Length: 366
Image 1 (cartoon, rainbow, N blue to C red):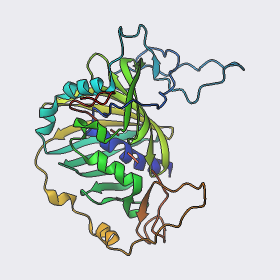
Image 2: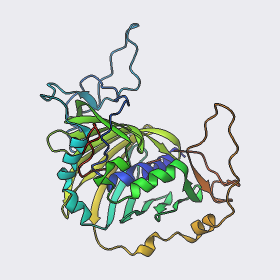
Image 3: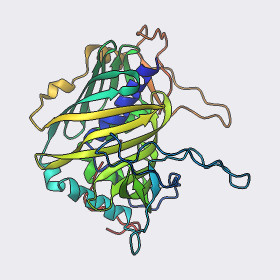
Image 4: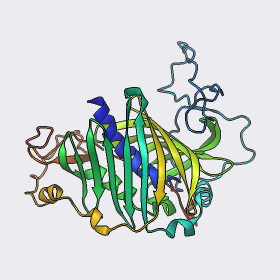
C-alpha cells in the first residue's frame, strides 16, 4: 500500500519537475524561513546524481539541554565557506540567470509540444517502471506511469478539467488546490514567468547543496513552501526542499537534479533523485522529443467525461468556528476500485517546479 502511495506522490512531484528545470520565479521579499542548515557533510562521492553529492552523513551530535535539536535538519545541505564576496544576488537575478543557463527564452518558446520518456525506480522496494509525459502548449498535459504488478497510473489536464485514473481509486476528478497546482505545472512556458508559480521568493544564503555551491532561495505560495537551490557558477537548478500538497496530504520532499543534457537547444536534468515518505526514488530521462502531438490525446477519457457530467456534489457545510476546510480533493467515481460510494477521496493539497525572463526586482521595479 505504501508503494502505491509513493507512486501517486511520484506523479505529483515529478511531472512538473521534468519540463520545468529552472523551477521558480518571484521577486517579492519573503518572510518564509529557510531550511535548517546542517553541519558540514562528508565529501566522499556516492552514486546519487553525478557523484558530487555527499555520502551518507554522520550522526549529528546530541543536543545540549540549553540548545535543543533543530527540527528535521537536512544533511545534504552544509555551510559554504567562504561565502561569495559582496551582497547576495536577488532571487530575480538568479532566476534570470537560470533561464539563460538552460538555453534562453527563445529556445524555450521555439517548442510548442514535448514528449518526455524515462524510467522511475524505487530501489528500496525493488520497483521500476516507465514514465511518459506529454505536454502541449499552452497548458495541456498527460502523464502516464506504468509499473509491473501495479498497472497504469494516468493523470491529465485538458486546459479545464484535471483528472486521474489509477488501479486503486479508478477514475477521479482533481479539484481544489490540487487542481490549481496542476494548472500551474501544465503551463509549458511557466519557466518564463515564475511569478505564476511562487508568490514570494528571497535569496537567503549560499550553501553546499549536495556538494555543489548554490544560492538558496526561500519560496512560498507555489507547489509547496520551502527552498530552491541554484548552482552559483552555472545558474542551473540543482534541487529543492519543499513541503508539497499531495493526495496523501502535505509531504516534505527533497529533490536533487543532475546530469544536464541539451535537447534541441534546451538543457534538461536527465537524473532526478527524490526522497519523500522515507522512500528514495530515481528518475532517469531517456529521451525528450519536441515532435508534434495529436491534440486529441488530451481529450477526456469516457469514464472521466461521465464524472464531469455527473450530478454536482452538494454544497459544503459551513465549518464550525475555528475549523479548517480542505484545500484540495480528488472526487472519486462511485463504486471505484477503492470501494468508495461517496464522491470524495482522502483530502489533499498537490505539485514542482521551473525557469524565467526578466522578473520584477524585490523592490517591485523591472
